[in-house]
Every structure is written in structure tokens, then in C-alpha cells.
Amino acid sequence: MALEDLARDLKKLMAREDVRRVVESRIRSFREALSRPAENVFREIVFCILAANFTASGSIRIVEELGDRLMSLGVEELAKELRRLGHRFPEARARYIVEARMKLSMILEVLRSSRDEHELRDWLVENINGLGMKEASHLLRNLGYQDVAIIDFHVLRVLRRYGVIGEFKSLTRKRYLEIENILRGLARRLGISLAELDLYLWYMDTGKILK
Image: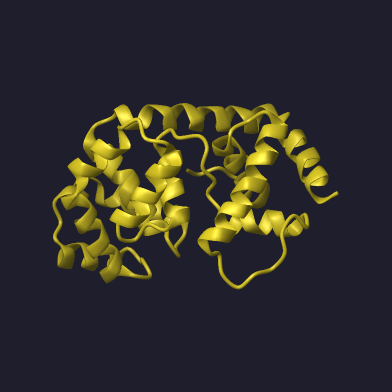
């Protein structure tokens, strides 16, 4: 009954015009993201690097405050700014961001290719320090891809609350893909994409939709 209960409550949430409008607006903006200038795409990469083991709202705030400076700050300067802005891991994240900036042309070429999005995710995890399965999935979703799941704390909490999954010590790649398949089945049942499902699950846990 666990999935049935979750599907029932998600249908109720999807029927709310105010929530549905926000979800549809976010999805439209994601679909347009890859056609925007390289600097804008890079900000999405930076957001996902910063959001690992940190808050989404805090990461958004940092990206907005640093703005165009993300394209020019060196590692030491960036680490100093991240520390000032309250990030938990300023040195490591600064290094990852500058490394990603140095590879930006290659990253953009790969992202704009016709590759399968699951292959793209594997490529991102292997080639961009600071991106794991969750962060790479988040980046792809924010750039308009629809069939990857962002299995973060909020999504896991909802799934546990409904008894869809149990407790476990670590989110391995194998377990990540298993949970993603559960979510994919749920999304098909509801007639929506995994990208949309993530936003509804986030709202279900937090009462808001960020990115």
C-alpha cells in the first residue's frame, strides 16, 4: 500500500492549481537553460557543486551573490568568498568550481550532444570533481533533461515516511538506481516525468519549490 498511498497524495497535490503552475513554470525554464549563454549554464554547474552536502537555498544565494565573478575568481579568492558566505567546504568547492570552469567548453559540448541522459550523467560523475549521482542528476534536470531522479534528503524522507523504502547506511550507485527505478514507475503511473515528480516530492516535504 505504500506506493498507492504516495501516489494518491501526489495526485491531490498535482490537482492544486497553485502548485501545478509553479512546477510547470520551473520545467519550462529548465528546458530553455541549455540554449542560454555559457555563463548561465556554468552557474547551474556551480550551484550543483555547492549544493552537495549543503542547502539548496544557501547555494542559490551564493551563486546569486557572486554572479559574474564566478567566471574569473581564482581558487584562493573563491574559497575566501565561499567562507565569507557560509559554505561548509570553501576550499574543496572552490577547487572543484575552478576545475569545472577550465573544462567548460568541453562540458558544454558534451551536454549539448545527443547522448542518452544516463550516459551523460555517468560522464559528468567521471569528469567533474564534486558531482556525484545526485548532483549530476540535479544538473541535468536543471538543464532540461527529464528522465533522471534527484534522490536527495527530502525525496528520501518522503519515501521513508510512506514506507516505500527502508533505512540504509549509504546511498550507493546500485541503490540510487534501484530507487530511481521506483520513482520512474511512480512517475509513469502519474503521467508525469521524473523531473516533475521531483518538484512535487520536494514540495511535499518542504512546502516550497526551489530548483
